[in-house]
Length: 476
Ligand code: NAD
Image (cartoon, rainbow, N blue to C red; front, side, top):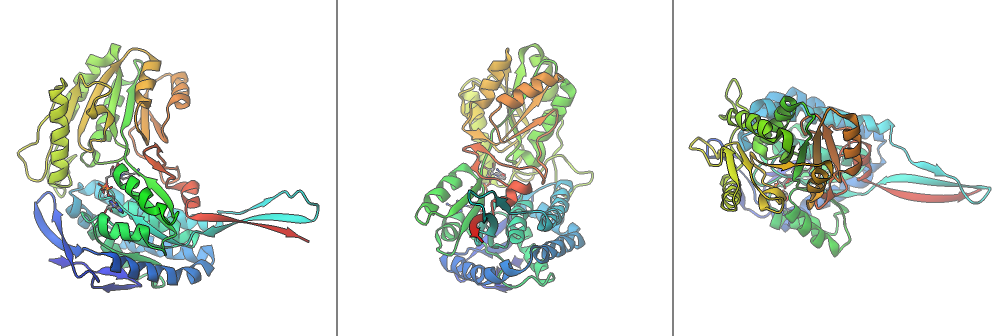
């Protein structure tokens, strides 16, 4: 069995906590590895290494820093299949999707390497005749990057690539459910010759190791991708030292289907957005509003398409569309939410139960008759369950879509360009997809409104998260 060690200051070391956690293969239901159950001492060792490495890392030119990101991309590409297999095994992600995540991550490192010669400071007009005002962009310092289990490899890169390019150093904590691919990457980093301490990987639980990273005096910024609850804890924990936080949290994305929509296209896009990785994706369509005139046709086609979603081993060929949910807790959460919805009067159009199959399988489910105020419409389910609600008027659809404590992503389906433009004006979400599935690009900016987060990731604006300004008034 694979027994992981912490990766601190360029070396694999035993956890100072001297404790290990078990890692499960969710589809097989077997323990496949153990990973450190790190604590305050591990956080301290990793942050000391990152802080010691940061000044000389920041002194390198941005193109030199970028050259390491390119080497990381090359290492990922050279090991792409093994990495995808590890990812597929540790979280029951179907192999084609695991491979996309690995390849996309290699692209992501290259993409941010490209920013080395692009990001700029500013020269600002002065009130004085013989003065220049310069705005420099400086690295924030030491970043604690805390990752979720659903895209462990890509989200790791989302924190490592912009941090390093900006001249920050990083300590990364994967979810204790999915540490394997991240630590496989740590082994590849050795081959890039990255100076020790620039990136450190530590494994452990959020409540212990994660909290220690957030509260430590050497942490200059916390970048969390995770649940609203973890975000709230981190805001509290970071308050003492006023540490900068960047939070990418949960979502409850609405999909609105207007009566002039291409129904088949909408059904396909919404099914794809709902069952990808078993619905365990922050930007997934989590609720749908359908114009009354097409509600019955849409519901029928949607239920049939969801019922046809294939399930099986992440390694099966041809690949199924879905495999196991991440663990028994997630399955129980989905099951309990559907039971409460049904008890409140929801009708199950398809699915509605856990299935007798290997892994933690919940059947792809469509629910009608949920009220706008119900838990099923207001809380993130993070499973293959979609409530659909009818609407009559444009304003009603927009009001129901916006009526959420989450504000991450949304989508609209219509063939009328005026409806598109009006909806883009009226929807209050960080991202909106038009006539397509929910999935963002690395050059965009993935940032949630309301309780879906503070700050964001990707593109130019994602890089800016890791930079702070210094303004100099130079009179001559
Ligand atoms: P989670 O909040 O349980 O855990 C995320 C990470 O935070 C883990 O590494 C965990 O150990 C750590 N953590 C938890 N509590 C902590 C604390 N008090 N202090 C420090 N660290 C702590 O989330 P999860 O179950 O791993 O991931 C699923 C959630 O992540 C969903 O809500 C999903 O919507 C969200 N997510 C959001 C995005 C996005 O880009 N907005 C992307 C992926 C996932």
